Image (tube, rainbow, N blue to C red):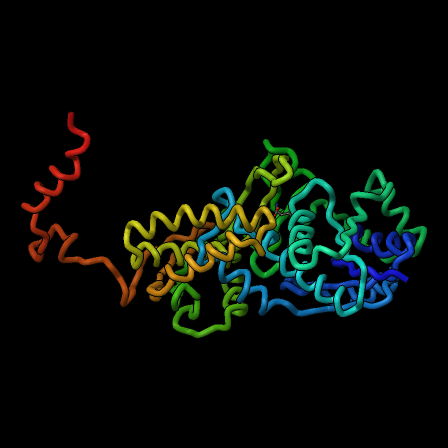
Length: 389
Ligand code: ARG
């Protein structure tokens, strides 16, 4: 019998996909990746088996996720269209890598995912699998099957005793991991409407927060966040901790009409308190320690890096080359940034680094000024010379 490894989330689509793939004559091995989405993984495993899986793998990939995916993106300063911190986009290549690994181990002929034909995630999964093993077949049941609506799918699930969670009405489509939450569909499709409070899962409404700000200090070593308020954390704990404090102060919400790779514009809202705090702090530290040319050039790289991640090109030669560039920019990114969290804002208010390029004796307007203003005259003449006719 042919075997297929399915990326299983426990939702309606992937649960129906287990049964559907069996009907196509495959034995279905489910793979559940723990990227910090905070599910009951035992219950998910049981659900997959009841739906008809012949075997289930559950893997805790949180450490790998933060070290090999989140950290490079933070160092790169990669943010898509100025607002999306790429949580979902970053999880996909890692999940795809394990799909391929398990497929090899199980001698499966194919891998499968539960993405629709309209989104970015199908691209990320399939491009990654194609790069890692072009011989593996890829099956996307949701693009193929005959269900016209969610109701039809639910009916199918009932018919075959596929365990699904229809007790709580799910008004949104949510994808969650340690780096953030992506929320779409339902009333969010009405662009004129403010997202209802119940759409947000981990951030408090900025209007309901105490009028007192919270100050925190983040310490980085060569671009990697190491301490909060002087206390050392492992990266994944540090992210968890910042998600908690940031969430309490309403930090990290964004509301974006984004350009999907498949050409569709879609409205999605995001919650990413830790990612927001870390990007703000990291960028602030870079302002202090990178020279002007490097800082400006790196912004171009950040933009390109974010596109590559969004487009599913994590394992591409350009992304690898950009990683080397980014790595070389981080050697002096060591120091501490003090931030003020206040009513949904994250504002850098203090900075300190042994590699600081700030020279008070040059910038000061006080009497300790060491800048020879007479030199400016010659500099300006030569600088502007090519433009005089
Ligand atoms: N728009 C985001 C991306 O392409 C998230 C997609 C998944 N969103 C969701 N709510 N399931 O990366």
